[in-house]
Every structure is written in C-alpha cells, then in structure tokens.
Image 1 (cartoon, rainbow, N blue to C red):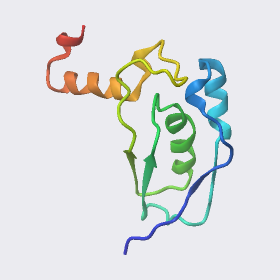
Image 2 (cartoon, helix red, strand yellow):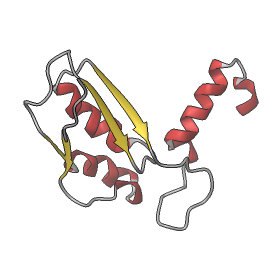
Image 3 (tube, rainbow, N blue to C red):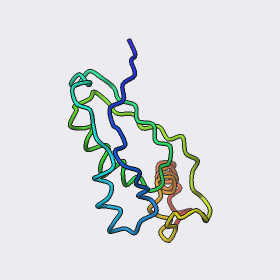
Image 4 (spheres, rainbow, N blue to C red):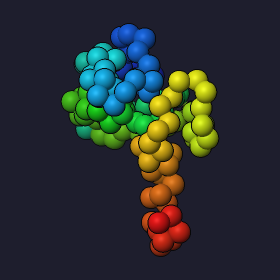
Length: 120
C-alpha cells in the first residue's frame, strides 16, 4: 500500500544555484536533514520531487547520498521545474550552460539516438 512520508527536510533557506562554484559545493552538504527509521531496507521506493533543479548539485552531492544511507529499493527523481534554456535575470549563474541538468539530459538523448555529431 502506498504511503507518504517526509524523509528529507530542508533545514535552512539556502539557494545554492545562486552561489559561485566553490561555495555551492560546500553549501549543498548543509541544506537538508534526513529522518531515519521510516524506510524499510531494500523494500521501499522513494520518490524525490525537486521544484527547482538547475545543475543538480544539491541532488547529486547531498540528497542522493543521504537517501542511499537509508537503503531504499529504488529512488525516483521527478522535477516539476521547467528546463532552463535561456538567460535568466533572477540570479542564476548562467556562465556554464553545460552544467545544467536539462542541457546534459538533452546531450545524452542525442547520443543515445546516435546523433551526437549534431551537437559537436
């Protein structure tokens, strides 16, 4: 039977996508706290809903590491944020387009469809 539990709780109001690369990587380790004892090892599937994925730094460097310690059967990532495709005037560091999750996913799709030469 499906159930809903809040496993990872945002501890502080940090906006890591705004900071420079060095600070960002340090900050992501201090954003979330995890609740232990709710996940049955190798039984429960976790669904993570991300409402503002830009580079995926917090997801890759913090959240997935924390959730892996809980030993879920599977982790599913769902993003409710639109892809970032154009310059932003609201503070996102846009200097390295190749670091954006949506951009990386698009490149991977091109490669999987044997059209990698299109993006070179």
